[in-house]
Amino acid sequence: MGYEALWLSVLNQARLDAREWHPPRRLDAVRWFHDPTIEPGSFRWICRHVGLDPTQTIRNIDAKLVEPTKADWQQFHMLDRRRNRDRKFLTGEEAARILSGEEGSDERG
Figure 1: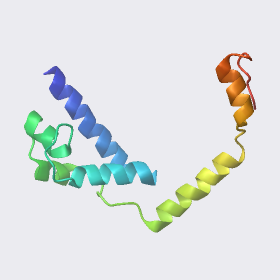
Figure 2: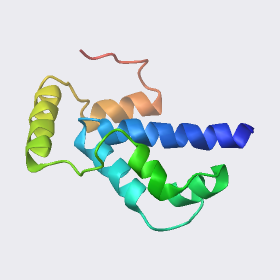
Figure 3: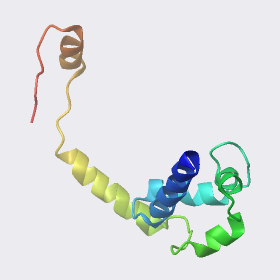
């Protein structure tokens, strides 16, 4: 039963990801559910190994399995730009000094 619980956890995480506002994560989850392959780790493969019908499982998922809209992507990029605006990045020289061990941990910002 251990591996079945693991694969059921994967299905549950994909269900949660399909509800996410985060467009890249939601897109990956929606595409994963609709992928017709039966390779190890695919939705259909997992359903087969835990005894679930893929079609019925998708019907049972509460969230609509729809890809992110253009508006979702625009909001995501706007928030991402705001988040990155306040980040401080190391220069190449600073990173090289830290990685070579010339400096201790150089905490910035």
